Amino acid sequence: MKLIIMGAPGSGKGTQSEFIVNDYKLVHISTGDILRSNMKAGTELGKQAKSYIDAGQLVPDDVIIGLIKDRLSQDDCKAGYLLDGFPRTVEQADALSAITEIDAAINLVTDNEKLKTRFTDRRVCPECGLSTSVKTCTSNVCPKCGKNLIIRDDDREEVVTKRLQTYESQTKPLVDYYKAKGLLKNVDGMQSVENVAASVREVINQL
Ligand code: AP5
Ligand code: MG
Image (cartoon, rainbow, N blue to C red; front, top):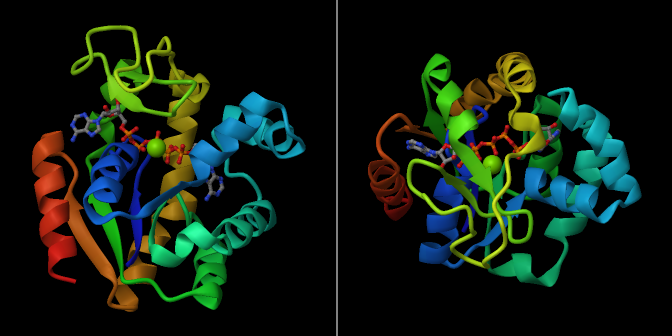
């Protein structure tokens, strides 16, 4: 199975991806996670991506498309994968459809004005990438690998505002793009984490 999970920043893509890849034995491919681990390792890609990420802008399409082509050609992807945070522009979506067909694009529908507290509450693990919230994880230690949790650099208020604007102008058009292809599956992303997960499972089980 080849799936996309899409939605605004903070809509819950990473959170739901954890459940989906475990339940359906898919490879989780998050372009945001790949870029952050390159930033942490100080690679050329990481250095290039940092200025865009810090400004709440998208990393250029040619860079991301090259990265995804390389990732999808690896052996572990043969069993199926979940794309999280890719595609994010029509150009990226066209590039993906030239590589492969997908089974569905699951779109987490959110009221973006009400998402702001999700960014202030979010804590992430710099080691394993786990994303959680102070509302559900009261300890400052990653429940998965034991490292200290941190606040993501791009969760500062001014960057969040820009990320949400970037989403509206460059990524939201993909909702109509996948609707036109008959692949769009809308899920209410304002429900509790558990209820979103149940709705997502319902969608996948009907594919
Ligand atoms: P990326 O890492 O993809 O970030 P994003 O799309 O902005 O989304 P987030 O990761 O912030 O949110 P999420 O939807 O995963 O929500 P989460 O589950 O964590 O991209 C970062 C940057 O990299 C981009 O800005 C761009 O610069 C660059 N980039 C990445 N991909 C790119 C591409 N393809 N092209 C170009 N540039 C690219 O949840 C958020 C919080 O809410 C958590 O604390 C969570 O616990 C909580 N939460 C989740 N669900 C719920 C719920 N139902 N109820 C209450 N709280 C919830
Ligand atoms: Mg994410």
